Image 1 (cartoon, rainbow, N blue to C red):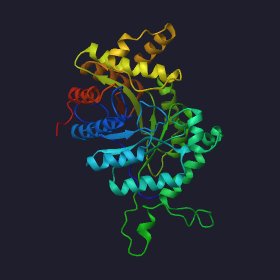
Image 2: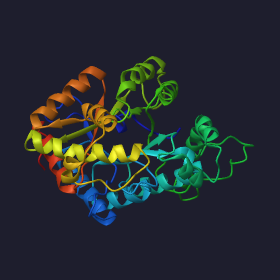
Image 3: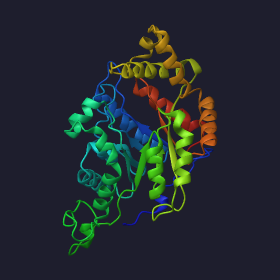
Image 4: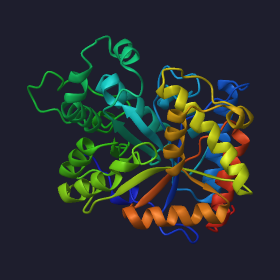
Length: 365
């Protein structure tokens, strides 16, 4: 394995935060907004996150969802790399079964060449969409096989990234470029370093695999809160020291939104909740406005879903959000919190990250 140091994985807590704080971006598109505006907001948030001392900024892969414009993480990350200088950028994550491992190795090798030492490659085994869309992506309706083959796909991707297929392997003469092969070519000066791998999950499968392989692990607490502690426990119990990490390192994705007052925070998160109601009932669309969400007549079943959904979103004033995040970090033992702020407009999301940074006294330059 080419050189990957633990300090490329572990973050540093800033200000009064007890753990490093990072950002997860779904590039949400609200009603009356365009994908162009959503992507511009992503640049604005990434710049704010860099300026205020957030550790990393990840983009999720989703498909066939009008309200989520993050179908191509590598393309978005290249754009963000051109507009930032220091913050780590990565995928949270690339859904590996949707892609050929060689393609991902090439994409992230290119990103590493664009932003050396700043790229993370987070990988998931879910499709990031519905079954029909996954079948279109994979050109196959045998979706379970794609998920079951995840460890083999991961091993293949790792060998492409490290350029170390054994002699006699069918891919031994195939090289992911940009990549380590350029350092070994005559006159080569390409850095042999490559992006660190993370495994993402919302259940125990990837938790155990990450532990066995000694890789860092990211858990989707923001939509699978009931599984968070069992998955983190399994990761830590399964962990074996590796060339990458000598001890477990786990971050959790957290839905959180701060506003200047409790009512405004509630208005903003309610629009995201209505968006999830529509998604879960087969009616995906753009993120509704807070006004529409407030006026919407939720059925008893929808109201039960919304109440459960909002219970797992840390929202309120900056002090309330800080308290909620601190309690969550303590309860789960997470090594890092990755905050996702889903709201109708980019202004509310930007304001939320600024308020959270202020609440923790994060750097201002």
